[in-house]
Length: 449
Ligand code: GLA
Image (cartoon, rainbow, N blue to C red; front, side):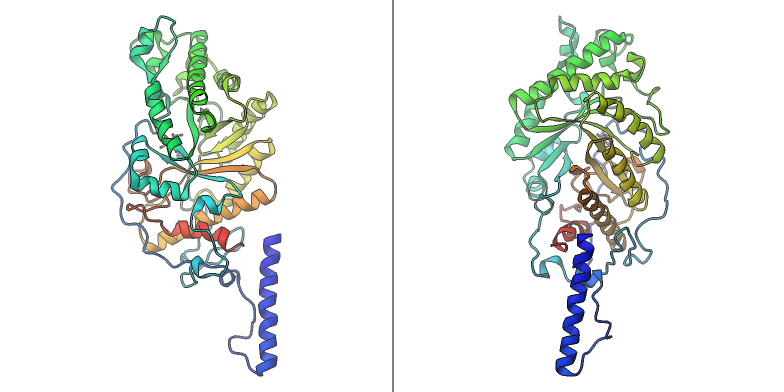
């Protein structure tokens, strides 16, 4: 409302100014309409040539099957000509407007400061990147939160040999690996989303078996819940005791739901050993028990914007919320160039928010198989529409606290492997140079001030 009023007011002022000049000079060039469209009133950058081709994905293990499997084009927000965009806010963009830096009053040149009054801005990285100076320069310029793409998953932290030898029967974790990552994140002055404690994927099968060996039988429900509690306790307490305040949120359970709704059963050893979805509530119970004050507990999932899955997730979350076990919904947001629509995402945000939850967009990327300028423009516009919607939702009271991109550059993406074709889904190109989308995301804030 306030934004719309400002734009109208701006247009009106310019119109009156023009009338004044006509009055004074007796002539006025132009078409005489005297109004300024949103595209003229707000700055839009030129196409910068975009990213060059990437080399492929990260070779990450354990990518979930069927992710985005239900994605299907549904009509998007981006016009066919790549210039005219009709979205929820009726933004019209072109390629000839001035860059944000040419507009008086524009101040922000990095994402984390631009959005500081709204939410933290994060990026998923791998452990080796924490030691790469060039990468970290870009990370620290634009982001204030990181998620470890793999390094804090059970497969990275569980120690098979030590677990097998332990007299107390409890699983053992690799505290040195954890310390390595946490030291580096802390030394860079970044905050960390903990990802992830309980997941059917990237959790070694031996963890669910007698004696912590691959060939063992599956353990009983009681034993598995003891192992779960022990693992959650050890990981959370190690972080909190040694790096207080560093991890501000945990994805306690990742992807507990099946794509068609209902719980994930067949491909989840959590479900099978515990015998039901009870493992989800137990995970939150243990996480709440060991979480330090202020550390937020999230349920995280993909295709979370699809109506049926969304309703199942909401049902789960309402139960957990009633028991005081969950603080937030992590919306992974692996999207493509036209699906889902921004309004589907907005509906989902509202549905989760109405439960009384904090919202974080935890793994954003936008599958884009083309590195043509026109497609980078479409991508930039779609990212912009998404962020405009987030701000609009926040104006309406939705509590969005973090937005994290799933990788820094188009060469750091899992999607090229997953989709079986090259993907250019992220904000930075192969040389870690900002793509057009970065300018467009800055413009959301800069053009609004
Ligand atoms: C899921 C997981 C992430 C990551 C992606 C694929 O979304 O939550 O940790 O594995 O899949 O990269």
